Length: 384
Length: 127
Image 1 (tube, chains in turn blue, cyan):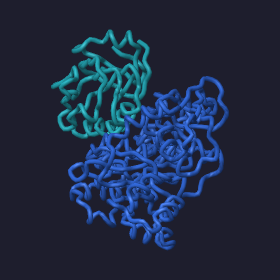
Image 2 (cartoon, chains in turn purple, blue):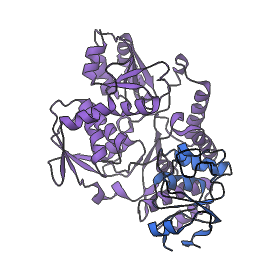
Image 3 (spheres, chains in turn purple, orange):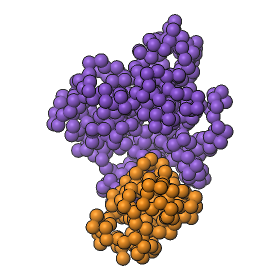
């Protein structure tokens, strides 16, 4: 890789150990992905925030790093394990709460915006078309590339962290226009188009796609389905981008059979003890929809609803919080379904959700069974 | 010998050769550097001070923090030699400043377990 004189000096440690680490990471990833140089990025979105994902080793590393490191560009962060405002109501281990607090402090000390959200594309103003960003959260990276007209690789926790510290990223893969051209088209052959079918389509696309795929037979996708598609795709594979359009090149069909195979893999129960909504976290539009759908209804079981702190004021002001709580729902901010310690297999056998990404992590990380169905079905069957 | 440098540096140590991919998060005890996965061909052996030769890393990217912890706990390998550069191993070696190079299959197969290796990942040489 070719580095500028300044980059070379920083790599050698002339600007301190933190920057040397960050440049070592960028160069290592750049060499591994055949980048010829680094390029500037304007915004980093970091994963590796939840104590459940990074553990003691991550917590200790970040504590050390934050002693002198500062983020150089706009830096936003993924959800934590729980909502500090309400955690006392749940049975979360003291040690977990302490370690999560340390991680939060380390990121904030380095200058992160305390967004604790996996939908940065929905709660922040977007830079102009074609801007390079460095997004580590997979659904956010795919959404940024496919919907927001931004450019990013499907970054890992370390490449995005290094981007936050340096304002740079290796010029490789989806940052290059030729890689952004899809080499496979998936024909959407399912008629019932709801957020769950799009989540399943995404999961399929992630498995069969390379860096970028085209999807035909879909137009005017609403935000809920679009987020579901991105999250499903990010869960199952390396694919970091989709475009809608006519079939061209090699094609595969996403039909009832393919959909059933994935549904059978992810849907492991016919019922559940609790309902979870919000992986990705629900934005204001979705909270508004949910609140409307719940009019005159009450949940028959616990329902946890995950959303970003950024919308909390409006959720309260517009009466959605009252309406969802009246129906028996719990609104949780700063966290999401994935890897939360709030859902423990000691207390819960099965979880009902409309999220394909949530289903995957609930099963693999929390070790609970999942009953997967769309939001209309959930409201229909699980309220009275 | 041709090799690709992922993380620069020099090392001088004994080769510890594995034919199996390594899951740093699950398979390694970060306090001792010992391989604790019974199904791994290095089970029970310590990575400390060795030049670890293995195909590539697998599993959670958080494994990179494990590599960093090995270094903090003074039981990290001196260097690593892989067949393929996966991002977890690359990130982990970069965080911990452990030299990492990628070699061809023939070169990988020619490295015998227990031999003394001088790795120069500044100029790209293995002696």
